[in-house]
Length: 363
Image (cartoon, rainbow, N blue to C red; front, top):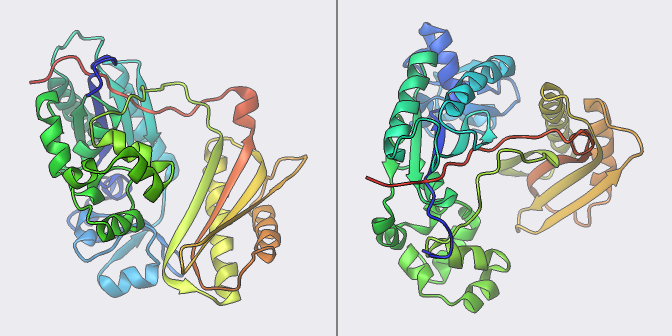
């Protein structure tokens, strides 16, 4: 670890199957059952309960595929207003301990508790208290990761899910990272992990053997990130006042799309989802970007910027179709995404919060 930077106590709190757990909590008849939030006829799953995950149901999965994997799956509609209400309660608990809270989404955040409001030395104890309070006030469970930086805390929060926590002590950090499978590294997706496997990189210790030049040659700018994090170097601070610069939605398809009608359906669905996200946060933007990833993983993006703000799903769809017509290839499509930038949040200096948690001492 780089000794030139202060040792922090960071907690990453991640709610367990948040949307699905809220639905099961509010409707006792759904408890213990396989449920999918969102989806339904020709839609995609937004979240799945742990009971559904056992059958392979995942978020972003087409409803038809989810039903095939789990015939007794129960679909329930999304209720964003309810999730936001509970998220606010959870955030209030965080602020009892620190103002350095950086929300990543409605259901997860970083907290920096190096200097905390209760003067508690142990970040591990703070995480326990926070998880207990969340359960008492909402009836929901949360998992937590505790470490000296955001990267490690994020990785740690996934280890004892659901309803658990993991502390990575500074003295054990090096060994932990060396034994960590590369696919568990935050920021290493499936495609990158498979690429690493082809180079004989399976664990952190394999990654650590590679030089900075080697990793940069193989993975571009990300190479420097991998070089640092495997050595426990990740000095990003918890940023409680981050201005949101874009809002994006995207879908990866389990079966590559080539039919124009399918593309229209997916662009319509993405346009509606983007509009929902923007509306609930009173956000508007002037620049729409279409992202296309093809079967061979080649990527194409194209944007249109307007004088006026976009304000309806129909506008997103019609503009995305214009961008679609500019695509360079007629190959099968693996992923589609829409994002909106040049937001009114930049003008109003509105912020989206992220949780960060600094460390003091570890147990």
